[in-house]
Length: 271
Ligand code: KIV
Image (cartoon, rainbow, N blue to C red; front, side):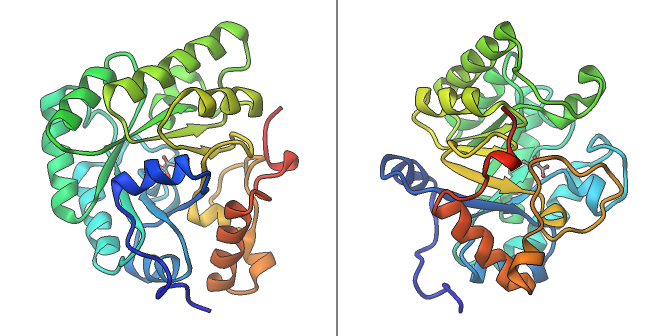
């Protein structure tokens, strides 16, 4: 079954409306036109061209080597075939180091077809979020485990477990929303903290390893299909291909599980 005919194209204002209506959002990463068509025609609400492409497509150990040109290339390939899903693209490592650099990179990604850019962190990034959104560029913030900070963090680890770190994350979430972000990805955050953050901000939260109480979920495409990425498989990953029987079936199973709140369960979250 294709849900193509039933869903209007997603817009940025429609995301906030979805949160107000309690409608959950299903997002997957994607890097090429073939998969993008399957995601789009089978009910995925948001597609993320993530800089995770550095790891799952290019074979690097981190996202740090990814460039704006890489992101624009993959964004354009995905954008060509999307009809309904909203397209978000990552600003890669240090492309958002200053507001001016971020604007140049964001313009390149919007020209490639993105409808929103994602950037990691708060603190100095708040000025960048304000700068972009004041210039009509929608921004998705990303807090918790921010993979571009892997060297500083010392690895890909759950964030916000200690009281002080949890309080800082909550404060950062309020700050990115106040700075103008339209969406907030929470990665590898304990379930209770993600729930608190989701209640505290009026923009949709999209969890990845952040429990079932976020307003939506995202998975990396290769993880969701059970492909061996050469990296340890995190607890929150579920192989939907095993359940769906085909790529299109896996997408439909994922979208349904996110929409009805059965994914993630406690076995795919951090307490
Ligand atoms: O780059 C990416 O794929 C991401 C997701 C893990 C949210 O940022």
